[in-house]
Image 1 (cartoon, one colour):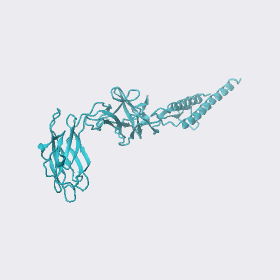
Image 2: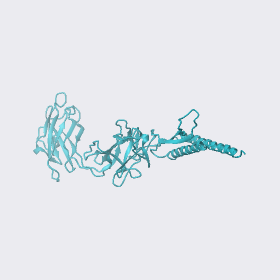
Image 3: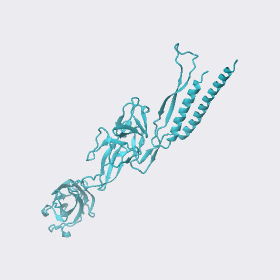
Image 4: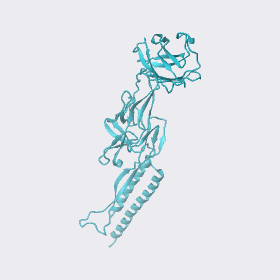
Length: 406
């Protein structure tokens, strides 16, 4: 009598229960992908080949394959928590060994590297000191806590309205005499050391539709007390043409001197209407040094640092990897997989490119385990196990009957 069918049935049913139990155990594991036990029937080899009366000798476990379907995305308070919305895997490095994961629970280690709970480092494209990112070989991503250097002002722009009702000035310009100019405004500019310097610009109406512009920095008149330039308006109250005036600020604080830059008065933004003087825009491109105040990760994987001087700068870009056959990846534990010959080589690129999904910062992807389905599968697997045990019992009873024949 043959017990093999029943034994093989018990074996595969036990392994099916193990796969189901593992899914249930990992229902709360971030990024876990449910596994499915797949089986195949078994036939004995025959020298004469198969026949219509051939009976199988049981079942065998063909494979246990993980199902890489999308899990639910939940929000979190950690900006380093990342969820992949779509296809792809995070690329990790552990002492130079590459692995892949869907678990986006990341944090910073004591060196500023973005790491998993097991210490594997997240990889991506690096940014140069100016914050420019170029696709290259991915390397370990690190958040730099260093201050960004200051940038001296090299250009400025003003947009404002000069009151056409103002009187024409006849007295010589005197910074200390408000009766020698019609209006003024001030802006902060920065030198090579990031020091703030106050630039004050004065406007004098010298004729109908004509205004002279004077400047002073830190209380001292610029350009040897001469006008920086002239603004000419049309009868419609609009500036006739965009006007640029060069400014040269002498410095005595140890920074590079003089600080030279042009001030632009755009034709489309400068007006001379019969309303009170008002500045609508005062801009310049310099800034002081800044300490990092926080960072965020965009949906394209860009790690953007925010600094105390109001600037932002890219520090790197997270990359994702995808595979032709993701089910062929080798499981390593700790929510990580490795590349195998069956999976094919990884296709590495920025999130959102090609078939890769996008990232969501401050979010995590839950396990894609359906507990209701797993519990129903567990009941089915239990009944199959019982049924196979019953075939063994029946075979035993038949054999006992044969033994008792005499």
